[in-house]
Length: 403
Ligand SMILES: *Cc1c(COP(=O)(O)O)cnc(C)c1O
Image (tube, rainbow, N blue to C red; front, side, top):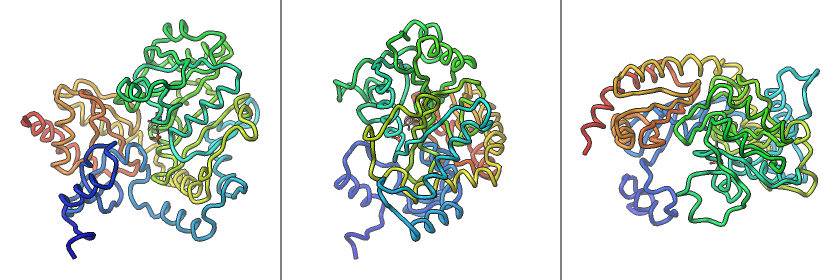
């Protein structure tokens, strides 16, 4: 057998190039299995995964609780369509609402969930929801990322992503991230919503001033606009809290989720709070797969495991340890982020750092030319952390030595 089951990396790369569209460029590795925060490639080489499938694998790879929940659900009741509902779907919606509004009862607002299969679809649902206010103007942030479908792309500022696909759905104003005065100047009584990431993940983990979300809330209120927080990357424990916005005290009207929600099983959610809970009405939106039983069972297992294994606290603690260790090298000029969403600002070329790290058995992401992003599994062990921090100066040395 030398054709279909060929195992050399080179041949898998060739087959990839022939069979898959070139949207992602050549894959860095062909991976074969994972366990915890470690993955292995075709040649059997082991890596510490400090990217976690881009802030997705909250429980790492192959977590027994996730495997069991999905397998059991799939063998009991798999897909059913949204003509029907399932227990896990209802339970997950209730759970997300209670996580968003822990002090439910007095003062809590109605909240309702629309499930999706991805982050961009969660934002697409939210975009359509904002249209139901009767207004069309949206204010988004420069350096934002909200996804690749046409609606989400219209809110994403990066020119290289937008330009090939214009015209995009219009009436979007972009303002400097974190600039409350610019935001106040852009929002009018015609504005349907302000859309903000609590931290900008794709931009390399950029953190706004501490009072920015509260100011955005006040500006939205002044003009009867909705505050829409895109927590696709920052939500579900990533920052050491269920949601990155909680500490700001700002209460959103819309929250979008995906990435970490299913721990690797594709699921997203658009949550409307207060009046926004009822803006999408029967027939306004839909999705065949969205919120199907295995996806909801996966998300319930992720949430339960974060609770039982104390992973919020762990994300905070391990994040601090990583931050301190990374900052100790003089070639690091700043370390940003919260919990296990970490940006490393460095004077060394980050594409070279990512390449050097990979060669030494560590997966990191060069989010921008001067920012490395880390978003490892929340189950990252002390041993994983120690291995990475011990290698960090050597990785930077090797990156500097690369032509
Ligand atoms: C990744 C991301 C998205 C898009 O999610 P997909 O699942 O890739 O469609 C949207 N918003 C933010 C903030 C993200 O980080």
